[in-house]
Amino acid sequence: MFFKNFFNKKRFNRKKFSKKEFNKKGLGVGEVFVFIVAALTFALIMIFGYKAITDFLQSGENVAFVQFKTNLESSVKRIYTEYGSVRVEHFTLPAKYSQICFVDLDAPYDSELCKKDLGACNIWEASSGYDSVGENVFLKPVAPKIKVHKLSINSPDGKDFLCLPIKDGQFTITLEGKGDRTEISPKLVSS
Image (cartoon, rainbow, N blue to C red; front, top):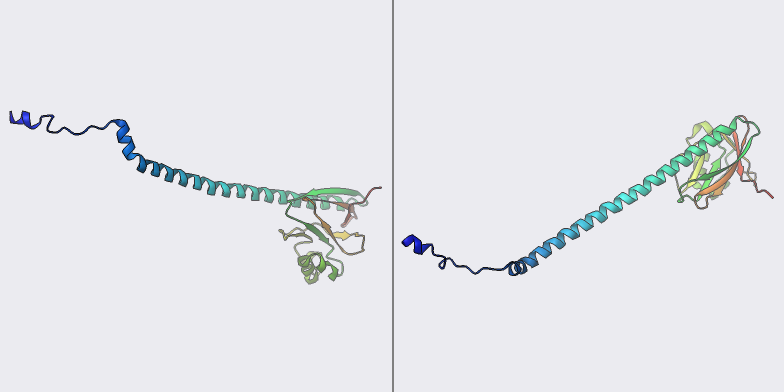
């Protein structure tokens, strides 16, 4: 009988809570935890998403530059053996570039280039001809080295370099095959 009375339900009667009352008591701690997890998740998505997008854009610019470089090199190389052939070529490159300069490195140094492109000027001054340097095409802002086949320049001012503005990532030049080199001039204006 002792055991029967000892384990009587009335003795261990605890106040019972309904589910609604129980949820209200734990709501504050649970909400804070959920909001912290949500904020951390959002921050991580934003950080890694931004990094992924910038990496994607950068790789797109790199691909566009490599494609431009390949097109320019192949256009110059293709026409130099076709003596007397003339082609007007249109090139597209990333929009961050504002100027392109072509330099005939076999011609005597001309300090006038320093007014347009200091980097190209320094390389031309230090060179001893086409074979002594690794580039003869220069972009602003500075880009990876571009060296096309031997050039001669037919500029309106008689200089041995040609600097052209790049508008919206595009420019046009005239290429003429000379047998052992390619002559570059600005786009001919048709009347």
